[in-house]
Image (tube, rainbow, N blue to C red):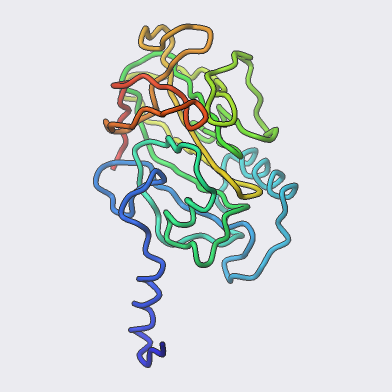
Length: 259
């Protein structure tokens, strides 16, 4: 098909790259205060020139970014998808790694490997106390509060290591990992960053959970069943098997996000 008008051509490209209305990676429409997610393809530059990125350099780049207070300038060396997605939770059951490019509407130009999605928001805990994130992802997930990494979990060793060696519940093809405790005041606003990513392709999963110290809703102290980290109530389907996703506590604490 040949489009004679430059304007029509731009509209045609926009329609081709339009993200689906809703997915576990987020929605293209901002309906409420939420995490804003950007997908990066580390296999190509902003100008769509191929890079020499491989699994080893991918891990080095993740470490560089996280040890430089999550500096976005490091990620902006690579292809950044224009359309952001908005989500109030990250609970992604085991699925094909091509689901992320499809969710962001770029499956025609981003192959399902060596990608990274960065979500961020300003948030406040629902009550004062000590909180910590738990997570797992294949291949990795990381969480930072005010630029400091407080959790790294996945299939390779990152720049952060847990001080608590508790092995969390099975989560698809791994186990949840506990993060650092963070003391927060009621209504205290913090910068929250979450990264998830995939190296070789194949399958992907990602889970970010939350725990408040002393909260009885976290069932069993050894490998606790935890609530999903949420910025709004969401009726998440219960996983059919731990090979899909970890068990979780429903009706957990709801954090506040600034619009």
